[in-house]
Image 1 (cartoon, helix red, strand yellow):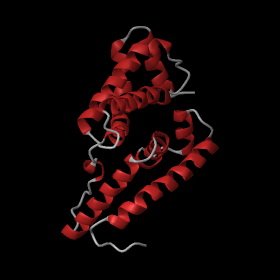
Image 2 (cartoon, helix red, strand yellow):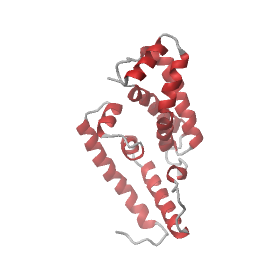
Image 3 (cartoon, one colour):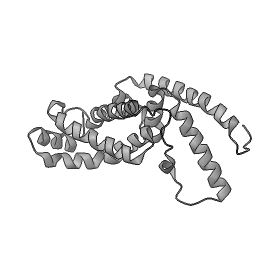
Image 4 (cartoon, one colour):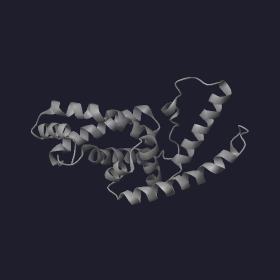
Amino acid sequence: MGDPEERALILRCQRGDRRAFEPIVSRHMRQATAFALAWTGNAEDALDLSQEAFVRAFRAIARFDPDRPFYPWFYTILRNLCLNHLSRAARLMEVPLADNLQRAAATPLPDVALERRELRQLVWQALRRLDAKDREILILREFQNLTYAEIAAVLEIPRGTVMSRLHYARRHLRQKLEPLLAAAPSGREQT
């Protein structure tokens, strides 16, 4: 069962009240844009894709079951747009690094900042090399901070499958990351 306030807004939208969709967009825009940014690595593309997903959701709202949570349904629309965008642009392996995703509030010492930036770039490079299912579940858990139950609802899979897929996705990420770390020019010692 979805949020009662959101359900009431959806029912109003289904009756033709366009303004009732604005609070829904406000509620989910930040999360949607962050998700799209994690996929695309480009803030402008992320904003465009999340806005397009809301437009498509509004156009299809009449077919939505208001007794279900909105975000998992919306997420499917957004995910498909992100995947289509990456496929259409043929940039799966050339996605720009999302260096602005995790900027520190305080600026550390220059050497530490450089090392963190290099490490962040290597993680993103490894993440981009994963297959779509592994990348998606890691983004949902590690960047969107969704719980296992929320991920299960969004992906429409059992909670146990979420746990299993996360385990294997983390393993695959580690396998992609190890050679990158070994080849990194920073002189870091391997642990």
